[in-house]
Image (tube, rainbow, N blue to C red; front, side, top):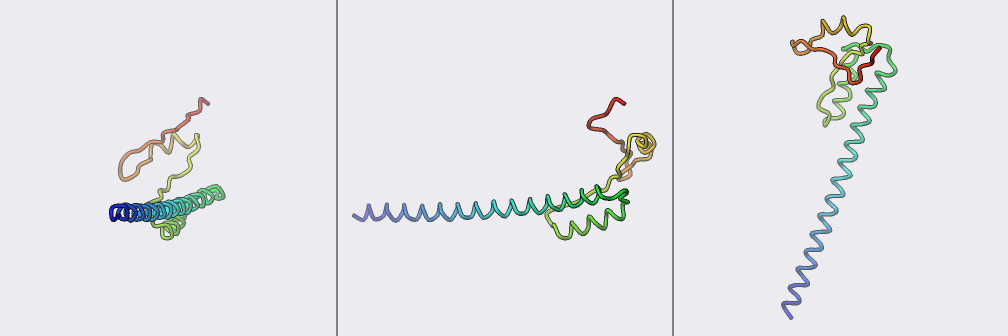
Length: 113
């Protein structure tokens, strides 16, 4: 009799532990989904800022990005880079440097024109 009671109690405790674990997993998943969604919203707002501005200078970018970074602590950094058209690329490439190292522009899909 005590063996059956012991197995029953073990079974009930195991079920309680599993249920609590599943609740914790769901809670963590929802928190991660919310954080990712909020961060994507911040990134999209930065994209919209660029899309609706004719020119964004580094100081304007810094102010806007700092506002986003202060309200989204899980975003580590944003980095300003100018939008360079093909005509300006040659001139810009020769003067481009970041962190005191010579850099160059690499195009993902270089057009043949």
